[in-house]
Image 1 (cartoon, rainbow, N blue to C red):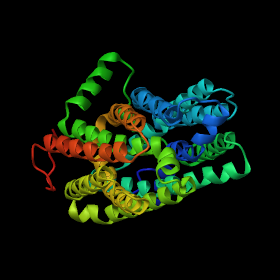
Image 2 (image 1 turned 180 degrees about the horizontal axis):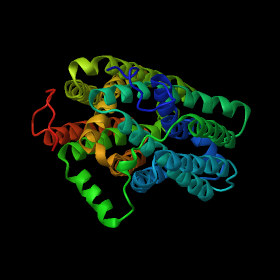
Image 3 (image 1 turned 90 degrees about the horizontal axis):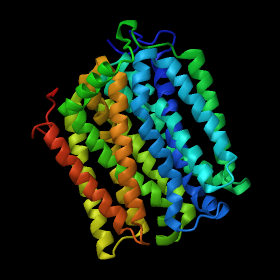
Image 4 (image 1 turned 90 degrees about the vertical axis):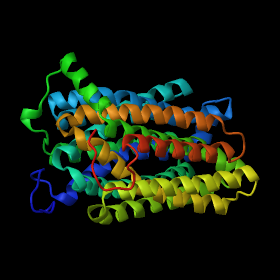
Length: 410
């Protein structure tokens, strides 16, 4: 049956469900990407000394986001999805307004970390809700479609942030984030039903929690694709951390950042749409494994140009867009494949995977960003190294059987 024939989320149609999940997840992208054009303004306003220290505005959010995911899964499996999701969104809303009122860098970073904690709930619960309702290739299709809608955030967010800076100070960005999340919270409270089956509720007992953790961590497919996604996402965070400095210092064109970032995001959205149309016919593994190889090839070429001194704004834009197209083909499939064996503990599984992925990606991205030295070399080499290691992890997870549509559950 098609998703329209049977509704696993009564009262909400398939299209509205996809849009709702995507816009919940977009709170995360908005909180990260809208900040990037303002990092220089924030550093100047709050008297941040070293240029690379401004990257903590992104990293503090990602650390809070990654660290809190482990707990949301336990709560979601015990109390259901909707109540926990609404609580997380409320935390996000409150901390957005607190960040807008911050008068020193430490207070801003604390608010950002707490905002990340709220966003973590949105991410974990969105994944768990999708897994409650769908499985297999249909779940991958939902992930790809929601990912495509979700990508409207990075397409628009930097431009919105830069546009706000033309008429207001940087706190206005946080105010807008708070208003956006308030609207999403109202939509969820009004329209989204509880999706967890009553028989799947798990009591908060350390024995059960540890058992679910062991199940998640001992599953070869789940762990492998989580680690691979950690590496790829970490390289992307490296770009986000240093993007404002790259465009200001390397290309001497800071105002072009929103345009080029949007271009890359459009390519990711195109890839997600392509994946949604092809995944049922070709399978998750062939699509994502080939995309992983393409990502590596583009990253190695980009690193070679940077190391040889032949890089340019044009070559960077073209290769970055190509890499993001590959990223769009693999992201939804990696997420679906890592969750596929763990449907009966979806909340805990999503939180463990999110914990591993986001904390690891935050550390990798911060390391790459802190290596910024006025050239593209650290960033481009970071993309290449992360891609190569990600493919090696997938090779391990699949026991050497790449590019095949067969499913290996452990």
